[in-house]
Every structure is written in structure tokens, then in C-alpha cells.
Length: 327
Image 1 (cartoon, rainbow, N blue to C red):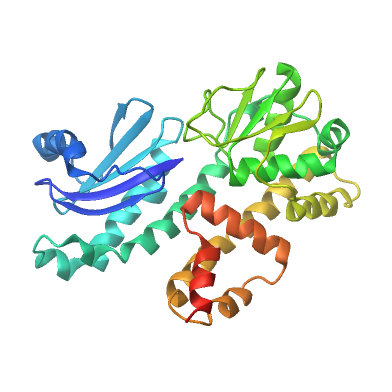
Image 2: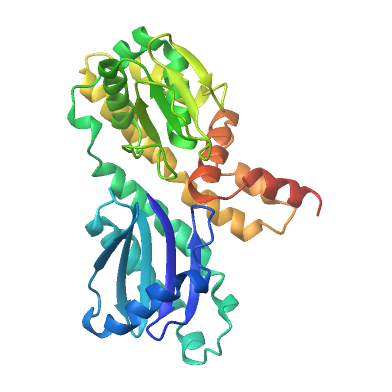
């Protein structure tokens, strides 16, 4: 999962930052050593190429063009090639195209580049969709079928498992065999990151005991007793309706059903880009709710969209709507 994106000049001047983790990685006092290192060997990077550096649990990828350096901080499990093709290089190219005049006359004021945030968010969704199609991990194991998962934990719980993994952080606790089979199904159905430890990058974490981590907010489902120890969401109607519609299809194998679910899910996620564009276009206007309503009217899908955007992009849609009503 992409955590942070920055653009700096080869001389170390900070230009733009988009933080998806909620921590201040853009503090120049913290980045000075890293920027100095880049400045020392920037000439050896070569335009359009990627270099990688691993610091703690994060992977730093960077590329250069026209005396600018684009930096992406991501989970170690993310593909360098996918980040390069679908996030880092496209964004650096768009930044140069969008702000060509401002870069020529730059006087050190970086707020002139704030509007690039919208483009960055849109490109992140493009990358996420591509990464989902390339996703491998638990899905390489034999997974439960949709019907098998319903028989194991029931339809409502399966829907909630999907909601928490996509829009929060989910820990599956219980028998190693069952949790991994259920986790494999979840990862087959939706684009998520399964991590080997519970951390800021986790969408789904599997354990045979309740994790002791007070720094990360997460929800926990016990597969053995089919109960929630901690949960953020209490309904997942969109996912439930989607599963029910898939199961009505006749003459299809289990893998076909899973692939159809994933296809429908990803097609709906594509609405996120349009949704965000409308938010930024009408965020200071009283007709924001009406414009968003033109995109999606189903209240259960809207609920899912708002939760998904808040978790994955950091935008509180409800807050924007409240502010727009006061105008």
C-alpha cells in the first residue's frame, strides 16, 4: 500500500507531499539526511529509472526527471514495477506538465502546488486497481468457496469480514487452517494487503491469538466461535447484496463466482475517482450533496463509498457534506 508521495528538487527543495498514513513524513528536519543522500547521487539515477531503498518496514522508491525527484514510500510487499508504471512516473510527468510555468519561476513557495493533491489521489486509485489484479499471497492456497464460507461463519459475518478488511483493519483469530482458508477467500474477492504483522499497512492479519497492539486500531473476528471481539461496522449491506446476487447465477463454478464478485467489486471501486473529483469541484458549494447523488443513489453503496474513501484516501466525505449544507 502506498503511504506517502513527495516531489523535491535535485537540490533538496521540498515542493509537494501527499501523506496517506497520517504521519508527518514531510518534516524537512527528518528528511534532510535522505534528501542529502539523494542529492549526492541524483546524477547517477538516470532519467525515468527507479531506485529502491528499504528503511525499517518501508520501501522508498524514487525517479527523476527535469531536475525533479519523485519519491514514493510504500509497503515492502508492493511491486516496484507497478508503482513505477502506474503511480510514480505518471505523477512526476503530470506534475511537470501541470506546473511547468510555476517551476520556471519558483520562489520557494510550495503552496502553489497544493492543487496537485487531487491528481495524486486519482492516480493512487489507478495504481490500486492495477495492484489488485496482480495480487498474490493467500490466494495461492486452496481457499474456501463462497458457499463454504457462508456455512462456516454465515452470510452476515462474511459480509462484515469483507467490509472490515476493505475499509478498516481486520484480524482473523482462530484455527490456523480455517483462518488462512477464509483469509484466502477474502483476498480473492477484494484487493487488500495481507501482512505478516499487525501494522499501519495491514488490511488483513491472521493470528491464532488475540493480538496485543495498542497503537493500531483494528477489528477482530474469531473464526472458531464465529463472533466479533472488536468491530467498527455492524452492517455491510452492499457486500451482502452483492454476494446474494452472485449466488443466484446458475451453472457457474466456484472460481467463476469469485471472479465475478471481484470484477463487480472493482468496477464499483472505479466510482471512487469520479466521487473524489466531484468533491473537490463542489467542496465549497451547497450543491455538493446533489452532485454526489447524481453518481450514486443507493444508500448502502453510498455508505460503503464514504467508508472506503475515508480509509484509503483520508477524505471525510460526511464532513464535506456538513460544511456544504451550512453554506
